[in-house]
Amino acid sequence: MKILFTASECVPFCKTGGLADVVGALAPVLAKKGHDVRVMLPLYSMIPHDYVAQMKHVIDFEVELGWRKQYCGIEALEKDGVTWYFVDNKYYFGRSYIYGMGGDEYERYGFFDRACLNALPLLDFAPDILHAHDWQAGMIPALLKIQYQHLPFYSNIKTVFTIHNLQYQGIFGIPEVQDVLGLGDSLFTDDKLECYGCANFMKAALVYSDEITTVSPSYAEEIQTAYYGERMDGLLRARKESLSGVLNGIDIGEYNPAGDPLIPAVYTSDDMSGKAVCKEELQKELGLEVRADVPIISLITRLSNQKGLDLIDRVIGEIMAEDVQLVVLGMGDARYVNLFSWAEQHYQGRVAARFRMDGALAHRIYAGSDIFLMPSQFEPCGLSQMIALRYGTLPVVRETGGLRDTVLSYNEANNAGNGFTFFNYNAHDMLFTLRRALYFYNSNKAVWKMLQKRGMEGDYSWDHSAETYLSLYQHMLRQQEQEAPKAKKPRAPRKPKVDVVVDVAAEEKPKKPRAPRKKKAETAE
Image 1 (cartoon, rainbow, N blue to C red):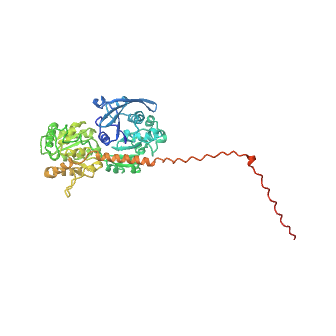
Image 2: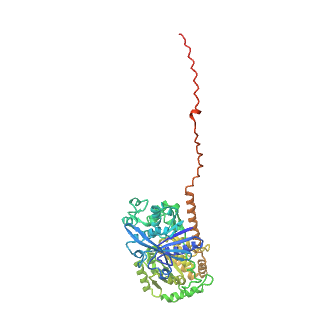
């Protein structure tokens, strides 16, 4: 199959969250299975120069955005069996940020979405499947159906849209989006692009995509309810036959404690001695008391309410009343920066907080911690809990979304499970579960080591998920073949009429005279 991914970020080129990990890991796995996989991304200024130097200029053209005509260049790079295309426009993407800070996001990603579609004929690449990711690529399925699919080149392209986080939808004013994308008033109705008086990139994809996926089976069910549905639950229920959840995987090559070059000592599930070294080095690096017996609880997260940090705020004093150390890595809301800054000062030598994005430090934290805390209010999939398990760091999570699909609470009755979970979004339920994990850490080392070994040996690769996506793609193409109008059987040509020349004079026979009628007998009265 010919498969095209369109996304706003992707490792190793640019990353702000899990979307980048998914696109960067899934595309090469599909390519290894023999498919022609290509990915389109914006050419941000933050992409490392080493990759930019390897890019080759392929084409350039103008993209019409209403009354504007904007330059667009396509740069290409071959890596891991995938062709990576980069949409170049310095005005839109040569900024110091990826997204979230400017007032023209609708124009930046409107440009990107139209540029992706306009580039395909020039690249001579007509994908069987166009797979768009999150709201920044959300207008691609809509524009394809509304403005492009009547053209022969685009007529057979099937679309998949993946929701990575329904909370972020790309909501803008209708006149602004109309001005950029040339969409008429008739399209801004509640059954199409209009959403509570606004234009909505996410809704555009949910309405016009052939299939919708999200990043875990549980999240696919949850977003059809009002609590998790972010005002899209009605639409998602209406499209439930086309909605499915495919659990994310992680890059098991990058996250591998047996060969990770970013951690102080490597280790395996059979020989965990290297993990003790990682813990000691982490304590030294972060200024914590160097103690082998104290459990380190870690958070590597975006600092926001979604991640359940208000629960930690509520009971942080009770957490620190236990004999534990706390490590935090992440960026986000000032409220939580202030919380963990206060905790670091108040519990000196026991709390370390680093407010930045630091991939290498994240690896060292996963390897050196004992417990990974992830009490999310909602979590579409989550990758951190799977990475933690891979490094033998046991997760304490709330049962929601992908956390529920990947972490099973330890059951003493049947010895099942690989971590510790709680259901209610409640600070003291979280605290009780954390204390339960601490009990096993301190008082039942045999169970703790068994759970570490089980976590490290779990399958978190993309192989199974990639097969699920391929099955979905193949189903869509078979369905397309069945729906295609059957070619009519050609009708046999009619036999030509033989023109006969008739000699009327010779052929015309004299009419036989009609016999006279017999007169009726007259009767007298």
